[in-house]
Amino acid sequence: MTQLIPTEDELHAFVDDRLPTARRAQVQAWLAANPQEAARLAAWSADARRLRAALAGLAEQPVDPGLELAPLRRRLRQRRQRRLASAAVLLLAVGLGGLGGWQAREVTLAARELPMADAVQAHRLFADTRALDIQANDPTRLQAWLGQHFNRVGRLPDLSGYGLQPVGARLLSNEAGPAALLVFEDREGVRISVFLRSPGRHFERMPTGQRTDGQLEARYWSHGDYNFALVSGADDARGEPLRQALNVSL
Picture (tube, rainbow, N blue to C red):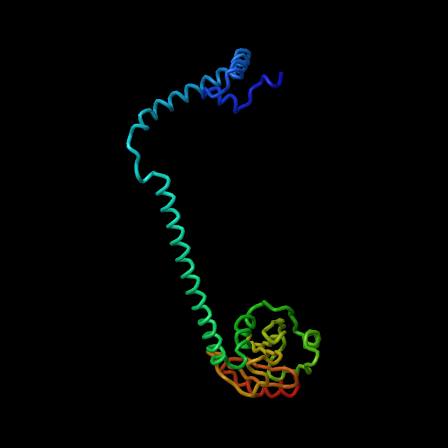
């Protein structure tokens, strides 16, 4: 009985007059017993007739050369080949330019890198915000935090004589490893920072010096196993006395 029920493909073949004669007779019998399916196929047949009528005469019309498959495939293949060639040239140009540009960048950075530039940048980013890992107005707590990350660093000096109290600290990193920014503030809300890091490949040991970067002044030196920088306002007269105090302790 199941074999008498036509499949969807057989129903389409029936409408297109492509079903074998024996099977067509079975489908006709099945449709006679299933009037709803017969109505559905009648609608299919009507659609097929309308489509054939709409397409009638197209076979006699001249073929548009632009629609011939062989030339169309050839043009598509040529277009893909041109795109691949253009992409290869672009990739080569970018590769060569990128290599030369990267090498030039390395030379430029090596020539222009300033001592403890990361200290000044860290001060700009974090000293005047609350983006600190630890909020600490107790020097003992700040010292304990510092010792957890830098076990060969000395003791923080008491900077209260300069009107400064600790605010907090942030752990950072660079190509040489971990670095830290310690932030201090006076009663007027003016903040200075102390930055320490391991020696890097450009400045293994930091000569004592100072430089002005905009409205900031960085005083830098090396002591023990670390490089240090004190970053303060360029017009802050406490800069050099603070550096000396920190150099003795740290």
